[in-house]
Image (cartoon, rainbow, N blue to C red; front, top):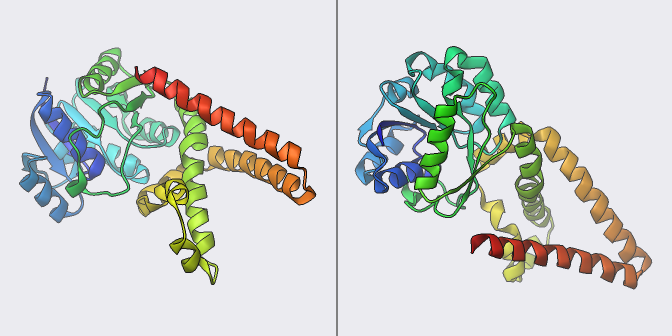
Amino acid sequence: MFEQLGLIGCGLMGSSFALALKRAGLVNRVVGFSPSRSTTTLALEMGVIDAIAGSAADAAAGADLVLLAVPVAATEATLRAIQPVIASTTLVMDVGSTKRDVVHAALQTLGNRLPCFVPAHPICGREVSGVQNALVDLYVGKKVILTPLPATSAVQLQQAGQLWTAMGSVVSEMSPQTHDAAYAAVSHLPHLLAFAMMNSLGAQAEGEQYLSLAGPGFRDFTRIAAAEPVMWRDILLANRDELLAQSRHFQASLQALEKLIETGDAASLQDSIHQASQARAEMQHAAVSASK
């Protein structure tokens, strides 16, 4: 049980976290801060937070749990602002989708409070953002990756794991480097491709007509293109090296398929499609087995 959560960022992720903590009986009081006063006012009206803070430091002061739910580019400035007011026993976490840049920010700013910090990445979200779209069960059944630093306190790391587990999440640990390489492949590149697909059609004279004919497959493929622009701008730039490496792998694979189509090599094209189909089926089977 935590006495007070200092919630810095009262958007979808932060507000859903606060609601989940409250439902699980894991926190007595939530003090929230967002740059937009209208956001914190709505969060207060919705019962997401119990009091409005005037700054990130005010939200963190006196809290035994602090969550940064801010764009990844704002992590360093936020950690610097709260460092003087957090106690050695405070658990500080973030929910950013990249981790090496977050770890670097912590190393640059937290000083003797570095052991308090447990970087975290909940693998979930929605195509809509904002406190008004918060869900109390957003994290239930979802993976949460913790990427502790060598200096991270064992006590705070254990607290973090227990907290996310109590909210219904499935917790695992990995290094920040492994995290960013993996999610460049399975999250950041797919978003990049969805953005490119929509922009490609939008740039064609017939694009609007083509979009009107799209079926469920296209809608499934491009669903993530509706993501929040500022957040994804920051994610793609923060993980640029790993993302560009994955983009090169993808381009090589795409060019290989194009070559088979260009040469009319039906047998090899079928084999390549079969390989992709099998890999997707095995992934789905593994996901179903893991959920049982």
